[in-house]
Image (cartoon, rainbow over all chains, first blue to last red; front, side, top):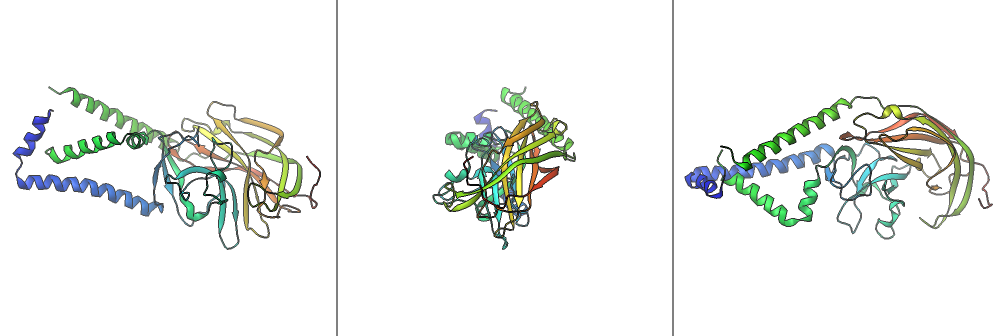
Length: 179
Length: 179
């Protein structure tokens, strides 16, 4: 299908049909957003799906693997679980395993994490002066695993031009293509 | 005639849907398996010291030292949807200041195809057994358990306790000699 053909479709559309195309494009975008927000409600996590961005959990997780998270407040954090947490001053959340945990009588928990592939615990990664993580730092607990699928995201983040090209192509296709 | 792009597109789409379907079958086929197995463990030498913890608060905290025996056979846990086992030995105990303490003392990664019959005698711990305070001396009930986190090719990431645990007590006096 060449470019001239593509625009033939648009030319043949009347005003109503064109608005219909724009609306259906909006429908796709908003349903994607709704699915994401709906997942946030169901899992209790602010980011229910994350892509592994570093090799610190190898050989379990490699760069580009996908993790599904939940973060139910009634499920306590325990040692050996893989948590995704945010550290002050770092934009990217970290995926590491809980190594030590101390829970007080009033329910406050503090814990220390370590990456499977790292030789030392994470105190060097935390904010200066921070010795422990608490529940507030946790984005979610890893519950499901899907390999390789996140590679696309990594590609897009590393080559922003590729991302815009893909988005532009998809957008154009949906707008221009006649059902 | 179909263009080159159309053919490529349909081959890619078909290949991806077959892959997704196979991945789902792989996940579903191992969803309801029981992964519990038993492990025998024992502590050999147990001492406790009271030394400053320079990795954390710099205050004098209790530091336990122990060596352990561990016997287990995890060969049966592996199937086509188990990529790796992450084994970890946890010490769990109660102190006056904390209702629950969990410290991982030792861990091991076993990939599929590697030897999964373990028989360790008088092993040293991999991580320091620091308490969050002074709760180890004369502590009468420390429970050692072996757990494993199953890393699948695609699927859930369960953390499972092996049946069998070992309880021990720490001495009532600090050891002051160098070890």
